[in-house]
Every structure is written in C-alpha cells, then in structure tokens.
Amino acid sequence: MESSAMDDAVVMFPSPAIGHFISMVELGKLILTFQPSLSIHILIVSAPYSAGSTASYIANVAATTPSISFHRLPTITLPSSTNTHYETLIFEVLRLSNPHVHQALLSISKTYKIKAFIMDFFCFFSLSIASQLNIPGYFFFTSGAGCLAASMYFPTLHQTTTKSFKDMNTFLNLPGLPPISSFNFSSAVSDRNNKAYEYFLDMAYCFPKSAGVIVNTFALLEARALKAISDGLCIPDSATPPVYCTGPLIVTNNQTDGDTDCLNWLESQPSQSVIFLCFGGLERSGQRFLWVVRNPPSDSQSLDISPDLNSLLPDGFLDRTKEKGLVVKSWAPQVAPPKFCIKPDETWFLISL
Image 1 (tube, rainbow, N blue to C red):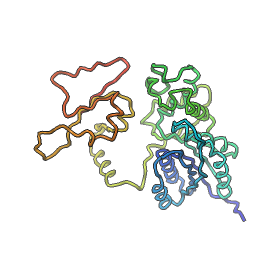
Image 2: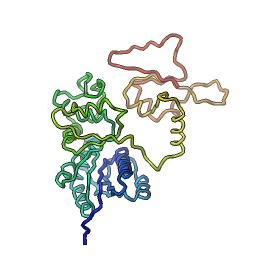
Image 3: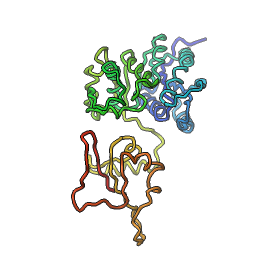
Image 4: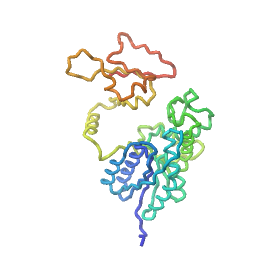
C-alpha cells in the first residue's frame, strides 16, 4: 500500500557533455548541503559522440552520496545525417528523448514528491513536460552570467537583422557586456541557416517560461551582466525569470595532492597578483598573440637553448593557432620597443615565459 507521505525529490536532467554532466551533479551535491533530506535523481542520456567517460565519476558519487541516484534513459540512435555540428547532435538526442523523460518523471513521482525539475539549457525541450505535470521547471546554465545575458538577448539580435553573424563584420552591443565582434560568436550560431542556430533560438525563447535560471557564477564576479539581466534588458519583450547564482561549482571529494598544492600556493600570493594561463583558453580566445618560449630550467651546460616546441606544447597547438599567433623560440628582439602593426579591429598581446 502506497504511503500518503512521500519524500521530497529534485529531478535533474543534464546534457551528456562531460562538463555539463559533472556540473549538474555537483549542483545536486550543493543542494543537498542545504536540504539534506531531499532525494536527487539524475537522468542520464547517452551522447551521440564520444563525450568523455563519466563512469568512474558516477560510481564514486553513487558510493559516497546515497541521496543521489542515477536513471539511465534508453539510448537514442540518430538517423544518418551530414550534419556534424556536435551541438545539433546533442539537441536532436535530447529532443527525441522527451518521451523517456516523461516516463521517468511519472515513474519517480509514484514514490516521491518532485519539488523541482532542473534541466541543462540544452534540454529545453523537456520544459513542456514539467509544465504538463505541474512541476516547477528550472534551467541550469553551466556558463557564466555574461554568456547567459547574451543567450537571453539572442532573440532580439535575431529580430534586428537578417544576416548571419559570420557575415556581419561588426561589433554588437549586448546588455551587460562589452562590444562583441560578430566573428566571436560560436560556430553553432554564426550561421542562421544552421539547425543548431534554430535550436539555440528556441532555447532562448524558453527562458521566460521557466520558474528560474540557475547560473554557474557568483554575483561579485559578473555584477554588470547580472544587473542587465535583473533589469529586464536582456529579455525586453517578456518577463525575465529569477536568476540564482550558485557558482563556482567544482568537483568535490576528488581532489588530488596536486590540486591542494595549487590552491595552497595561490593562497600564499598577494591579492590579484596571479595570471592564469591555459593552452585551451588561449587557443579558443581568438586573440592574436606573440609568445616567447624558452627551455625549462636545467642543470645542463649545453649551449642549445632552443626549446623543442612539440614536446612543450599540446599536440596540434601550433597548427591550430598559426593564423592568429606566433610562438618564438627563446628570444624576441628587444633592443627597441616592439613595433606591431595593429589594425583597429585587432588586439595583440605578448607573453614571455
């Protein structure tokens, strides 16, 4: 006989991309620190491409956090297509998973009272299911508030031009953000004829229909973007949903000694004195750069000070950045101030290590 008093639960639906998935689970852990009596249910969808293995991470969470359970949905097989945009493939899998999400919510609701359904923004298709079942539907935005502001303003940009971003060659003014070059938009939305563009636009139209948006940031970090959102500037034609800052979300219970050493070292440095340099971030930033690279310190007395760039840099880094950046071995002329030919729409910076 079913008990009349059901335990409260939150159901979470992450995108299968590893960064989105882990962030969502860490959000579940954070919720439990404030509401330990809750039961967290994570719906898992298989990615249509190699998205990085989360098996060991899931096993660790299941073993250490019994209040979190995982529900694997049936695998979706996409029809053959020439579309290779990974965002489009994810959107398609999540769209076709809607009936399974509906069934999972119905199944969980038989033994739990679902207080909220939290979806990754890629999973916007499922907001309609939450509405049908009278469950408050929230979006989880894994990026920061600046990106959220741009996403919320996306329909307005769409309505004010018929051109694709890749064809504009101009700077765009978005609420809460500095001017952004039209070339800096991701490839998924740079062409308005792409299916991914259509999906991101549909997702943006769903923000006002949600019970709120949870964003992976904190207020002091992105005050300008958050104010633009709360003032209604990013969704001028509709109501702006509540926005909740919960970041930064980091993986817990899995820190290595190296992570601890890194944090201890940072804590010992003067405030605001450290520059964080990441190969991937430098590559994806699109900024033009001149990088002077020297050999690591060595006891060797060899006169060969020219570094082996292939052993020092990630595979393919030089080829992928050759149009935007130049890596110089060992020395750059410094007899006189560097003379760079800087075009009005370009920025260079010099890195010397």
